[in-house]
Length: 488
Image (cartoon, rainbow, N blue to C red; front, side):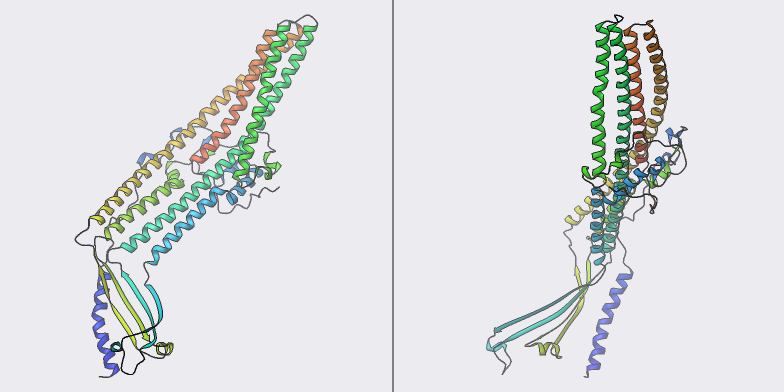
């Protein structure tokens, strides 16, 4: 029989095997449930309950929302934070790790190859050597092994599906980290600015009380006031002076926080970062969108949904272990006494055939894995539902707090204006001698309290705004050309 006839017969023997495997591959189906995205409650897609406030609008949430404050220094600080924050570096590393897992899962879709070679020198019994061959000689062996899993039941495809969900969840986690970093950076800057504004109010209050104290001391020297009157005014003055270092400490803490958020040591924070001494303000109604846009935008909801998809796919991975694993394998190699025998057309061997592995009938472990995967999927669904409800609660709470704090601020402003008017009148009356020191003391204390409460309200409103933007999920455009990095 010629070599060509031998090759034809080998091909005829192999062809039915390849045809059978191809038919199995075509008939393959991925076991386990197909993922269907969960549907949030119908009531969650409408307008927000607390959005009936002229300070907010139902326009879409602005990209790069912090620019609504129209503060270039803040823009630069946020840019620095997005580039250098350590939490974001961790989130980006987590994406790289998830991508590596996806790459490993996709590698199972390809044939697995292994190349081996060995060389040994030894002595064989005479009966194991051909007549005339040396009993002591080299034995060199080389080979190439190839194995390809026929993914009949979707173990590999479901694994890729699960790993893809992990990557998308990691990306959403990184977006959530960006939302938090931007909000924290803006909050730290706002806290520093609010503290500077409150510090100015506290110092101005002390200056006014110094003037009242000077006037009371002068009246005491003239016999028109008692030492008790002077002591009372002095005590109030010192109480308000004690507020100054406490507020200064709050401002320093905010600036130190700002340095950390932007990837700097506290000493490296440029002075311009703490130069603002007025509260952050937004000149127009805050755009908040609606519930449907919120659920599509919040990155923590996207992350929870993608983790649910990955957990659902892992049910299929576990279910596939109930069925046989079929691989198509082959190897080719050569054995000889020298490299010349190997590469010079020496003896060649090859093998081709399927490999079937099936843990049957003992499938208790596989069924336990399925039960665990199903439980994890149920937990992922519960986490998704909880994340949706939390997002709605946080947004409604932030909207409500913002609206009520604006009303409170309006009332405090009216009270402050009345207290200032009363204090001005009382000072004039005291200079004329028509009121006593107790009346002046009461007026000054009322005005000092009103000033402090109004400054605190302004700071609280700035904080409410940032809470609201954070609850809305924030947003930023891919291009941030208008934000110049803050430099020292």
